[in-house]
Image 1: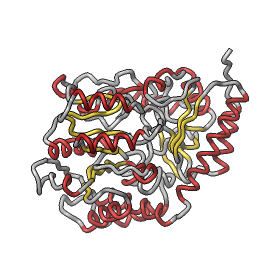
Image 2 (image 1 turned 180 degrees about the vertical axis):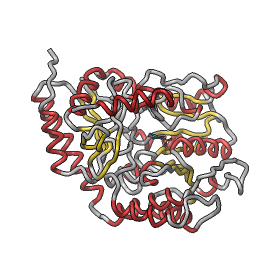
Image 3 (image 1 turned 135 degrees about the vertical axis):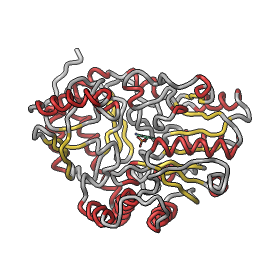
Length: 429
Ligand code: PMP
């Protein structure tokens, strides 16, 4: 494959945009090489500026669960665009969207739309703090809740990829209110609650983590967190920016049968346009301006194009009663078949998977927290990534990210992917 045009465009971009990208992981810094510049995407495939095509396992980091440029979503956006792009006034469409989400997910009495997952999580903890009149929050090492200051402390995703899980520029004043616990380690959380009695406003968690690679909650971890939060009067926030409408229509709450007090969304609910949302129990959401004294706002919040794209995506998913079953079946096939091939090659690895999220860790141990994810053989992942890329399979360019399977990844794409994995050569010896 040739990457001449992508390379030239990358050099050009670096002149105008820091690192040539508008979000760090896109720069391929950890895997090395030149990022591909995408020209278009359709269904299960990305097409780059050099004319190469790839089977897609990122899908815009989650939103494109229907595959790229779904014709019905495209039509919905076109129709909406003719009516106007943005008004900065209330629209009926916003209520339609809010009602649809509330009717279909547990524990959300009211919801407010924003323009990114970052905003959603940032706003959710502000509301939780306003509601509880407390200041500290507990999060988990390796989880990522966007790039607002409070969360860039032992964070996952790009922050972990680049070895800066705690960002420069976050003040000590802010950092002191963010307490980190180990994912899946309930004793750690018990201890933090004990040491900070009456001070914890919220516990925020990715109920299935996707930002240290895919890591699953174990031993009823979420249920235990629920109990601890109730006992200590803290707000339990599920960050379902990735998992919402991906694991199940009701997200991780539905899948694990655990009730959160607040939930954040993003990605899928925007159908590929910029969206986030946070919602929760009525008494908590009542704290929000203009009703309450917690301020939060946005020029483009509830943007009609994003609402239309999101709503039409959600409605299409809802219409297909086998949607999640099929996604999971295909993801399971990928998992089993890739594992079989790697085992035949004697390549030590672990695959974590839930629904249509999965990650390969080249590691001997099970990966159930950030420490184990970090101990995996990341240079080997980088080789694997480049092998796949060169052969037309596009994986997330970091071992600290989840793959996102879309409904357009079918037998033929799986076959192609497995053929590529079969060609991967590496010796453990
Ligand atoms: N929460 C989670 C779980 C995420 O995965 C992300 C982004 N990948 C965010 C929050 C932040 O969302 P955004 O990038 O839209 O700001």
